[in-house]
Image (cartoon, rainbow, N blue to C red; front, side):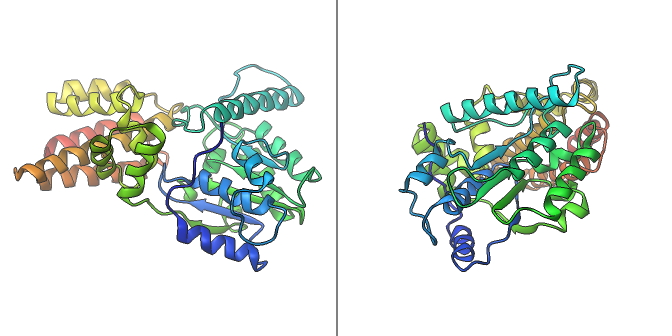
Length: 350
């Protein structure tokens, strides 16, 4: 199975591919923007252009582009956060285990290119950073250059051994080989070390239009048109949020619904819900909960506006509180404490 087409971001892609055609494309790029808007898919689309044997814009029809879309190009290396094995082993064994885990994830994404949110325990460990260094040092096998994508690069700083992993990445960025292009993606670029950010050309990947999210849901997930429209209106330009809203079985969807019900039920209920949140080991799951909470609040707000009922200002304030809490959580706030404070603040306005 191949990757789906890139939805939206046409002007951004035109600008970046134009920079490549004119020889001004940066060797080290940071694609940042809200979660779920397609940053890694943009990175893969850029890989199609970078690995195309012809200079200039790639129409996506050449053999190299088709290889990229199947995640089968030998000069494309896509590194994503992985869940540590938990086993105590030496560096060589850790690298071997990490390579196996990455291979399994890529196999899953070849089979099903639409993937869900990261496991809260997933990170770029020191073993992953060493794999990155190895990939960067390789000679291109087929193309005249190679592309290394580091997805969710901010996961370098959330786990054990993060400093060593970040320093390994920093050394790679200081003197990348001329035949290598590095593309990092992040929803939380401020979580990267300033020394790393200073070596990257930052490019903002914005939110999609509602019509683009709607079209994605209809064409890629077979969502009925009327449902796709409602979901897209509340997804805030994020395909990731839309996918979560489309699948009620998603853990973040269920957690957000439980949290809203607990806010309605009072302090005993929401205190218990806050205590269920793991304090440090599941920040990815906590962020997914907050994202889905914003989606559900926005959906309720739209219902109020459509019905002409009162309370719109209250839901606007609740959404603002969620967004504020999401920023504070990235600054090392204990998720349990933060969720309790958020519930108390929301209860005061809803």
